[in-house]
Length: 268
Image 1 (cartoon, rainbow, N blue to C red):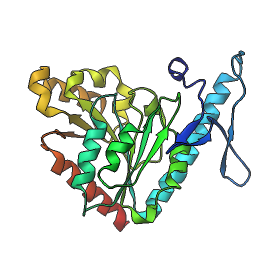
Image 2: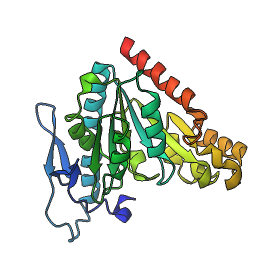
Image 3: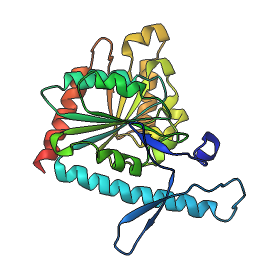
């Protein structure tokens, strides 16, 4: 899948405009630590016998870094969200509303992933929360190593919640564990009812599915019951919430859930 979208030839990525490195090759040294090395040389020539080895190294390395991220979150009692959806489903609008509603309840930091621009980060910074922008270049997803680099720039001990707004995409991000406590997938009423059936890996990986833009359901001709049925088919284990960031309907239940989950982590 990534070979079609540009991930097979990734360029450098940046955090708040500062170049970090090109797409890494991961491997583990004798000390058990994961190391990443830049992979800048041209891959235009064919390596038919090395493709699977490369993919295995990237995924295995990613998973090891994800576990390190997860361990850091757990040690600090931090709730970490990986928020995923297709473009235009309302991630940034929902997160802006969430950050404002959580003021005085949870101290929240945000990491935003996009191929380019810091537009979403700029919107989220209006809430006063610390926000870091990862510009992924050609990558259609965030990886655990990118998140690990961004976490170094957040005062984690001063936070209760870290929200990772992933790149808008319902395909590749499903495969990459970032070390999150909770995977949240958004499904807008303007997308129709069959997105869970078209993209089952993404929805099956979700801990929470949020149906967004419910204020537009009538205008969009949205069949709520059919959509909920399709979500339950692909994500029977997921909690389902319905809300509108525009009207505020359902926002309290969403924020109450986050406060409750973080309180549970803080006690462990």
